[in-house]
Image (cartoon, rainbow, N blue to C red; front, side, top):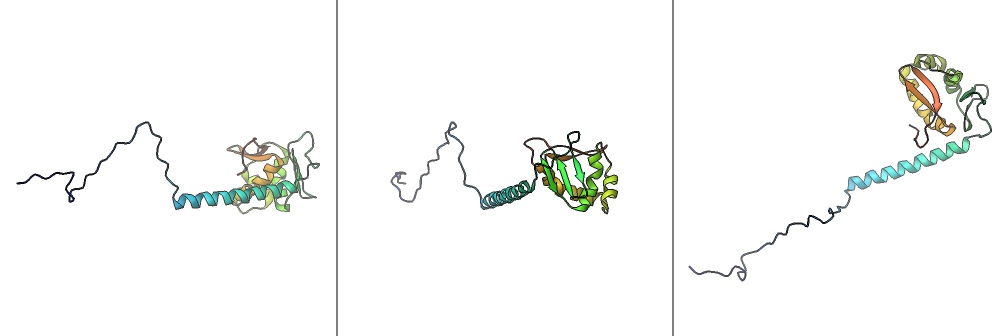
Amino acid sequence: MATANIEAAPWIITAVIRLPDPNAPPMKRPPSSRAIARLHEKTEAEARNAAAASALARQLQPRLRAPADRLFAVDAGALLLRGPMGGIGSTERMARTLEPLAVGGRHLPAVLVGAGGWHDEEALREALAGLGPKLAVLGLRICRRKAGLRMAKSKPGRAAS
């Protein structure tokens, strides 16, 4: 039997596998198409939210602030919500809904459902969630606890939800 030179034989393939350097930084992989699509959707949503926030900020009337002794006031005749940053227009139904909160203290959701004429608490919850950005422009938020709902100052750096 003839011995063959392994390095010179054309039918033998030699593969050398080198171990990775343990001190090397991890390999950066390109983002997947799904990740790129999610990033694109996220930037579009941020642009839409910024445009909506600037539109609400333009509607704010800084001179129509709440009275000095109160955090929040509702002018049902003029359909205005007044907060620490100024006043902003609202619908008649939302003004009626928020009137109990303008008095102060905590109120059960059933009180607000009756005041605004909502079908149930779920409809009220959705309406208040939609009102969140307007209240944020006023510098307010709705504080939800087991004891009830109340109007509170918005926390700085916190986005409206």
